[in-house]
Length: 344
Image (cartoon, rainbow, N blue to C red; front, side, top):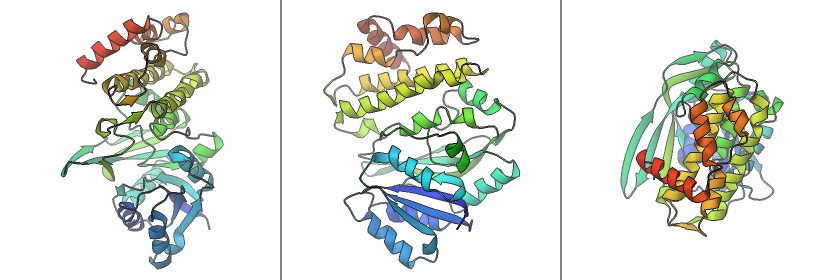
């Protein structure tokens, strides 16, 4: 059966939360949805719960379970969902989060209205730590980008303008497939390695102020370093290696008018990673050396290429220099700037 929308849900050891996620997905007011559940070979009863829904829920016939041959992590799980999706549009939903009942209907209506490649909803972040719950809304203004390069230029003009998450947008599945866009096989910031360049493939985009997604942050989450007692250096290094591939992908868009802005955003993300390492250095084992932190800031451009950028020269030059200064100097500068900006 061909569906209009696929909701892709990667599942790995989320038995405490999977009912919340499945209930919200199956409560959608939009009818023509494939619920694609990716079994990433967990060790708890998460998939037993999913099979229960499959057998007993009125929409159970639209739940399709695909099992990985072995646990491969979130990046590979998302890739399998992309390859298996039968919907014209794809929507990623994490298996410990929830969505509003009208999420798919709202995003789909706008995709059709504007012939958009992608439609973003706004989201609510829900932090549950130490018995307290804090909710914060992250809302976009209502915006439409319908001209070539318009969306990418806006995204790269403001570092924090667009969410760096794979979830909470509806995208034409063919955008992933025809451009061979895939996630890197890491568990932390795997979204960034895809979404940083996703705007370069998009011609028409829509942003909505409606809260359509509920993002839960809890202890033990890979996306919350500050609430973890121990972080393996190898875990962070895998992410740095994946981020390095983003640098290498720079040549593809060098001729585009927003390239200098894209370059700045890429290198600022590496700066934030370096700040995160310094902030959490007491719980990272084994520790990063100053040289390794300096090398995080290595630019894919030469000095002459950086000077030759059509805009934002000083910003990009500052970040370039952090990658070539003596390690101790680079770390000192990152620590000073990071503390000044409240990042460390």
